[in-house]
Figure 1 (cartoon, rainbow, N blue to C red):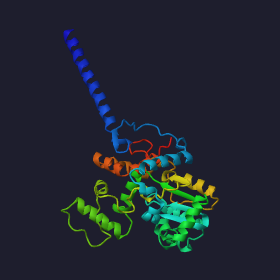
Figure 2 (cartoon, rainbow, N blue to C red; figure 1 turned 90 degrees about the vertical axis):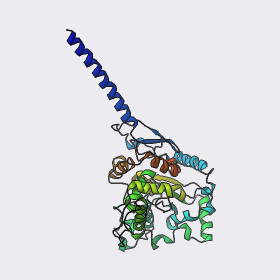
Figure 3 (tube, rainbow, N blue to C red; figure 1 turned 135 degrees about the vertical axis):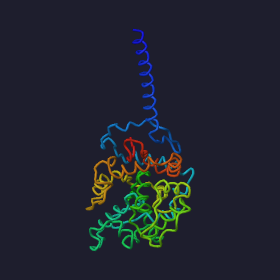
Figure 4 (tube, rainbow, N blue to C red; figure 1 turned 120 degrees about the horizontal axis):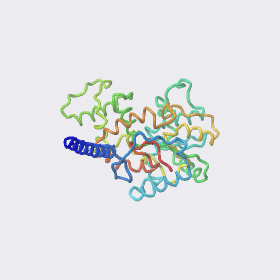
Length: 351
């Protein structure tokens, strides 16, 4: 009997120890699920249930009036540190990425790596200006050349700028912009312009070589053949962005492209591009569409793009994640974009 009582006491202690250890491990596991931001420059550990059911997409209402108010509040904060952002006369290089399609009275700011090529192509198509030889080709392969060079605000005469400002003040211009979650934009820039998935020309392949050699000082000189470059890892690429800045047009913060003295008529998110295309062309009574939407799946949260982004982003050291967010915090705030640990990533949270 005494031996049996001793055995029960031993099992009781063992079970309690196992229970305490299990609870500790579960708690640590939940706490260590990467980072989520709560305010500019601030990251905290969050308990994110990965098995949590996703809310339906229609529970993310797209209210233009509320969104414009949110964007304006963000710019009011931004202008305290960068007042030149809201000055039309100082837009400078941002004009290069803003287009005026006169025949359909649309001004569009096209931000690289935010689906701008497909939108620009749709507007040129609505004006009937796409040559037959380009029919069926991906927009990015031809749309940024001579077809649209005269549409860029940077190429307009002083008189044309004055005309545009008068039309804008008279509300006779429909102006719009499409933004993207800065995390997926970062991953897209890496995959398309820097990684071994890149299909671009020698310029960014040379940049890829340069980034690799910076991260690997003892590495041999890359081959002279630009088709066989060396590729930095994703973490090495982000480290370069955080430490050296984002000078290349594909990596610059999205707020750098905005001419915000007069607010845009319409704001959209790449993640809802199909919805925006239908709504915009209905509003403007135009017979066009935007090809090459965010992904083939109807839910951006389940897309291949989002899954790959999560895998890469979860590999980032904390200091790099915080450093990148600090550099691009205004991009996150514009639409209150979700962090990569959020079950609703990469959607904007506009509730």
